[in-house]
Length: 151
Image (cartoon, rainbow, N blue to C red; front, top):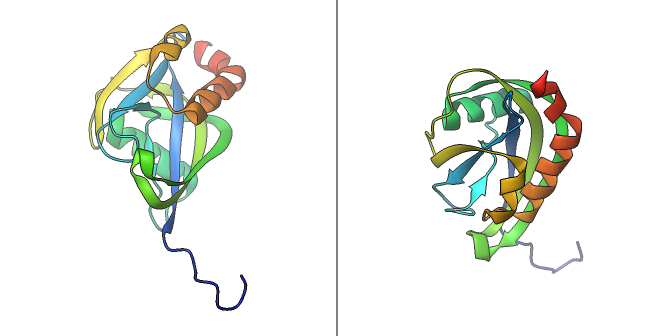
């Protein structure tokens, strides 16, 4: 940074999320109850807590938002959004680390900061209000992990 250049204000938030597949090959989405992207469909997940590993964080967030216990199948990719006032994140830089997963127990029910939780076949995703990066992450996980959930 140049001398006498004002520092950018804001915060960096590390989040984790899961692309969860069921035995029919459907993906679980939650409708967000809070900003950012309130009202949109998204992957179950949230902020990583201090001292928590990435995998501990994603398992906790999935449990809190959906009531499900899942098995992590692998890393999908990383998505981020920076200072996007249109989605309620004007002062934030979100770094979202996404994992593929499959259900091992439980019934999906919205809880915590999820207003709704629902399974969707892949061919229904185009009609949903869904962030383009989540579409990309789901497509990558479908290529890498969906078959493992069907086994």
